[in-house]
Length: 58
Image (cartoon, rainbow, N blue to C red; front, side, top):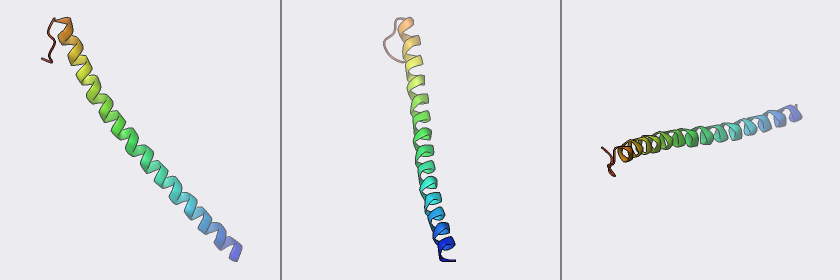
């Protein structure tokens, strides 16, 4: 009885740790995707302006 309780508590702790890790990874990947999108937009805009001979973003 005691050992099964101990196993379930350990399982719960492992589950919580995995959930925390998942949340952190999800949050960081979400932020990275947004940053990636913003920088990509800026770079594409920059490049198209440079090709036209303008240094600033149009």
